[in-house]
Image (tube, rainbow, N blue to C red; front, side):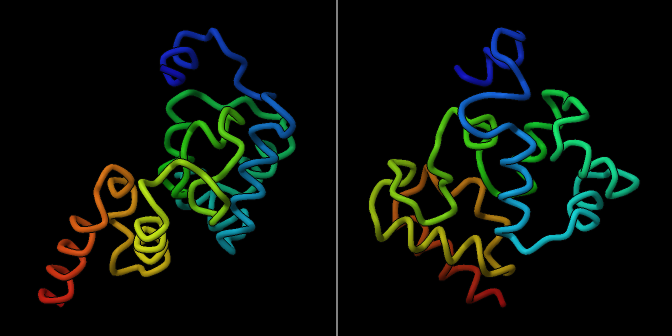
Length: 141
């Protein structure tokens, strides 16, 4: 529903809550250990100056780019927009996952490049399903 409001232009894109979209992008980029140049490359921008201007709030960001930022940075649109204060990948308390053990498994999926492709779909799976998938990947490696 939140994405619907964003796409319809009902909610503001840049400043929501305590931090702006750009500040959240910068915070998440730093958490991931990425430079502006690395994020620019992952996002398809030609240079880091685009990322710098987004982080400073100088450049507006299209809805499709907001979604891509969330995907590339392994977080949610809701977090980047300030609608959900707890980043689901930061280890903060959140109802994002079914339980603590599932959150720990998903954290492994996020940190290990071998499992990273499963990360975005993982929040809707049970811990048993996640363990089966991880086991299958390990057998294929």
